[in-house]
Length: 229
Length: 229
Image 1 (cartoon, each protein chain N blue to C red):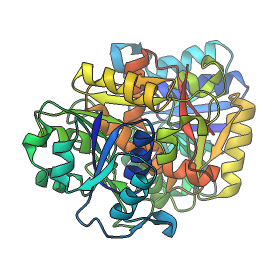
Image 2 (spheres, rainbow over the protein chains, first blue to last red):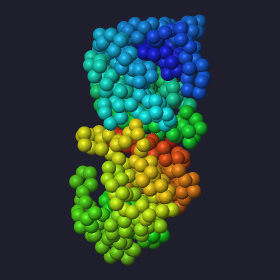
Image 3 (tube, rainbow over the protein chains, first blue to last red):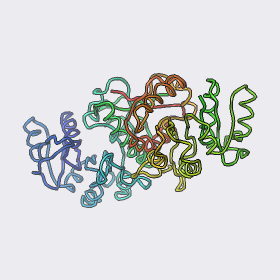
């Protein structure tokens, strides 16, 4: 499948490589393909251009482009931008390029402008996921994967034992496709909890402050939640 | 131990009965001891006065009073008020009555004024737990139990398998007492995750929207989280 990725940072590179390794065609996107990336903790990432070159050297079908080119390219589109940048990125990516497509929204609108712990932008209002859906009414937005570290997203076996991923979206068929194909078949998730419509994006985005505190308490980003009954 | 409970609703009655059954003396508190209580789902609860009478008929050391009487009575104080009412209740309960005592803050500042799903009041700002601490600088505020249903708070075995409770507070000794004595010894919790200082109350309070969506998805309030690594 042709997959367009909005963004080219840590989440985009991690998910992109996983999808490429499964044989898919992936286009990542950036405002500046040559800019070197920095992660939290000052870990350096390759620029989008360098990453594409490395992937192609591995024989993978990788490419890079503008946000609108990636959106046009993808039969499915993944939003891997920083949450505070997402709405501007989508605004410039051409609404028609998303028409009828599943848009998997992985972004978290974390606001570090007042220091740490960060706050969740839009809390008490419509979530980022709902805003993306409103900006792209002809897309089928599914919020998922935003509750775990990038490496766990594509390799849930990094976390030992049973644990759960959440999906939320207004279109039941798209939630089903994301659950059964993207999450279970491609990424290896065993348990997906369907939270219903996109108002649940408020819930999973609001979980991030707890994720950060648990990461501090446990000393690893490779953890996840199991809903126990 | 003498335990003062701010509030007399569902959480206050559930925790109060558990503490009484363990032999403790409990004073619940209310603006109006005779007012009949209503829970979500229109379940009726006894008034504070009726509840005290029932408990005393069982041979338990229960009493009722004003907020300031309950705070003065308690060697330890539990905040079981509705989160949006907490700061006003504390303001009227007499700052000196909390001096040097552990105040266990169980309240969630859920705001249903804009409909469902509710928003978390104070999100993006200081949490309710931090505000309580600021209003009562001589108390030792520990935030806990606010991430589960009232029945699960005092009987974690209602949820099968391993699952976790969180504590947060600025005083390490108080977090330790709450973890080891209140949660493990008295209520039967097996696993308590120490999230550190009270800024973590932002994290556990912000989790409530996810709790509500998971309750809808699973069809039961008797669930909890296990942090899996």
